[in-house]
Image 1 (cartoon, rainbow, N blue to C red):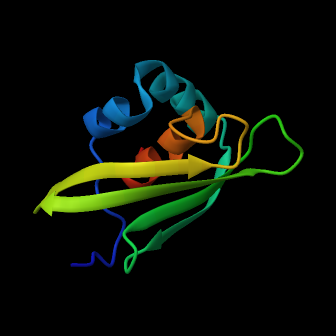
Image 2: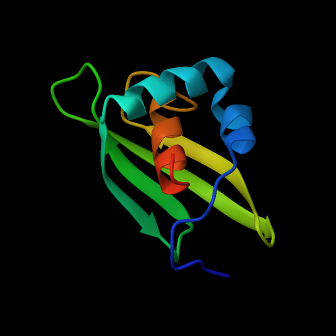
Length: 101
C-alpha cells in the first residue's frame, strides 16, 4: 500500500519514537526553520529531509513509516547523519512538518 501525499504522523507516535525531550528539541529546530528538502517516497514509505544543525553541512534525516492500521501511521525506524545517528531530535521535524507542524 502506498500513500501519494505526506502521511499524518501523530504527535504521540513521534514522542514515543524519539522521546519527549527530543520531540521538544525537535520543535525548536523546526521553529528555527532548519528543515528543508522534505521528501516523501511513497514506494518505500519513507520521509527524508535535510535538517540544519551545528555542523557545516545539514544532516540527512530519514524516517521509515508503516501504515499497519488504515489511518494510523507508526514510525518503524529513523536514521540521521548527525553524531547521534538515530532516535535524535533531527527526526522529529520531518515527521512534524509532514503532518503540518
